[in-house]
Length: 313
Image (cartoon, rainbow, N blue to C red; front, side, top):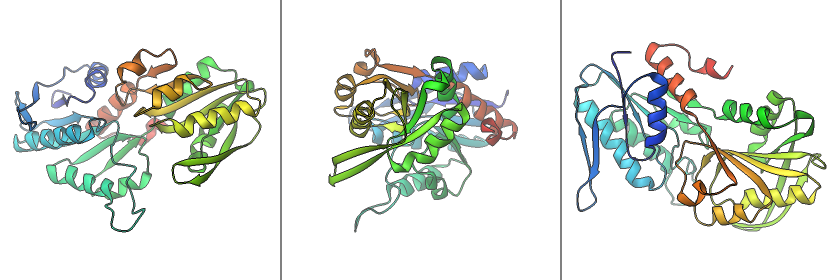
């Protein structure tokens, strides 16, 4: 791996460090700062000519600043004659804007994909895309990794499968919950959500047996936590003993932490694709497990030409 170099932007340096440690490599020397007017300044301070470069940068909050850092870092190493440039984006911002939901609105995920390709990325590695079709917005290879294996291992270490039920918080997550439960040998259920108006939940009905069980609500991300906490209340109302939540991406914006603290959720288990806010870090309800091993292995296999898909067989 002498020809492999890893750089990190400012969005998630702790995860980047853990990935570099997994690979036995030091992070590359890059200066990522801003000018006094807010413009991003990038300076690559080592030779990358002819090297295989991986840039680790989640496009989480502040989304636009982190996205611009990523684009400029890609451009910088491309112009420094790197042999191959891979954008490693543990959390892909704008992925929820993957289609037109109203007249005269952009498909933002497609635009971001175009920007990343135009900047010079030749491959993308990401984790649990909110919409799988975003892979099709790229004309370069995209490896969409899954947090499920590390979440499953954690669930297997703390639960008895006879008392566990995996719950999807909405219809869109049914396949994810079913597959998660099947691998664990547990039961699964779904929360059927009815909206009385946009952004207003009228009622929630639990479909499946949760009475007397420990329930794990499984989702790809938790943003404002409205749906998650309402689902947890509905599950408790149906007789579940305890409710846990397992999510890949802890966006946790707005009133999320206040809602979680005041909810019946015993523990929110998330990965480190997004760094936690100070409030979330100090919460006894939040537990973080790392994706560094899976991402690090994906980088290694991408570099050596081995199968990345076989990580999840």
